[in-house]
Length: 385
Image (cartoon, rainbow, N blue to C red; front, top):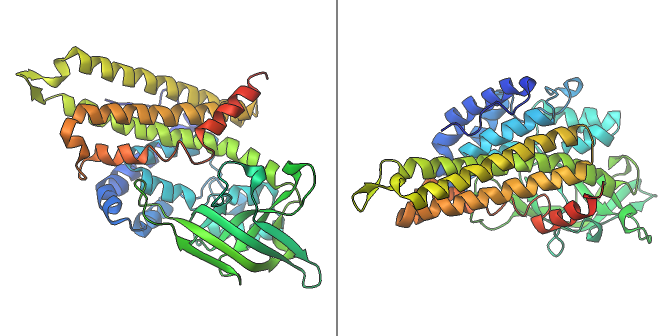
């Protein structure tokens, strides 16, 4: 069964897709269960991904990357998540947020901070969510105040669910810098080194899924950074993130598709060759209908996601298409995983089974990059365009 075929993939993205598949088969799949059980950070796999040219390579060639476009990053995501979502997320989070610096940062910021990411000398992350505020970007409370005398910004507050909060060399941080009636114009983006005074981070307790990826809780206690570490102009942070998440949600759609493919493959392999009541399980019409439904939903989601990738790349009502692709693909992953668990019967709950790992992993992408309930708000509001 070949689910992630290249027929819907633009021709220029097929080579990198093949590279990602070969890497996933050699370096990710064989150790996925081990890292899921241990919950350790997969440094060795990350370094192998860097050597393979698959980490942080959407950064432009002028800054040391390969300049991979949205289609190519999406193609990588499908393949990595099919092999293992936790390790796949680690590889993709190593440069998460750096694209904001490339798009809006100064030449000096790009040379000092962006180039080491592209050249795989450092890793980074993006700090947006807070303990009491999830998807409401205009409701975040972490503040950044200007100390003109010292020539610094002073950050106070907390961030939660931050990938690489402990492991990163620096983060892109979203903080409140104003208090005007325009709640969307009150936020800015900053580069915050993780060794800055007043920066404290710890790992969030173990998750049920994607255990090879580490998220953290950050406390900023009069955390001081140079005034030149603001990205772009003050007050533009919300709009920077909105643009960034349109691209990110296409890639998260790839996360869902990779997981859905894994669930479908596991279900197909399990029911063909296993007997019950004197018959091969695959001969039961109920099983055939379940597999048919899974396949139809998967193909519908994948077609939507690749169409959405084109729309976002061309900036044609990008918010609608990004939200639609992310929502459909991640929910199809849940649909496929739940039915695959049912087909596995009692064996589905065994820790050693790949399907049990997939079942836990699929619960996470429906929440990150904006919960799917928020995506439906966006889909409705932007359907008029």
